[in-house]
Length: 273
Image (tube, rainbow, N blue to C red; front, side, top):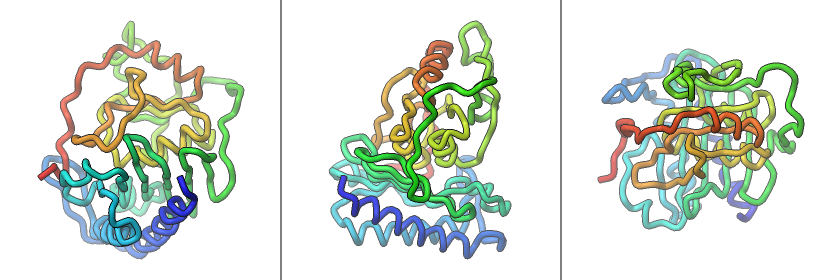
């Protein structure tokens, strides 16, 4: 993956972040999406328009998949696809909280080849390519080789600890934490601040496509809850959940999980026409 592809994503994310910050804390207009899919604001749409126009002007032969753009079949015939969430963590953004992120990924043959997660309110930019290290503000990230003392920490929502998901009805001994942005959760594992991240329900590709590469290049194992690799740019763009951790802990979590039955897909905010 040429460095200029990653540079393109970084520049676009940083400018998109500046657009988001012009709305942050200023009560932007917002709406509720149909089907209980959550809120969207004028800031989400403004960042989405900028990223769409900028990235596709630079790479007009690439496909496009974004939370805030209606999906179309054309991306399925493209060799490379931009997978974007203009603001991951919109609820936090609308509350004036800082833990929202822009998530930008370049996907080829089902895998992320370049990724950026930018948190403008924290002045943080995480980035990686498929052949390079994970970086935070230009500094290399590497997971600790040895497990820390105490109970491992996991970033996940409360339903993941429902006994129905675990063999014997007993979740593993993990201390649960939460951040509103899934992309940020993945980066927090990549930088070693938390030991693992998981979601046991379907996850939209735009939420995870960038973060999974950043976590992988820092040394984490990333699979779905059945241990399969995550494949992107699917016709229905969802991953069937995620388990992300250093190798030993990842294996332990998978060994304790019950087999997950096929999930009912979440209602899409934009469907293939």
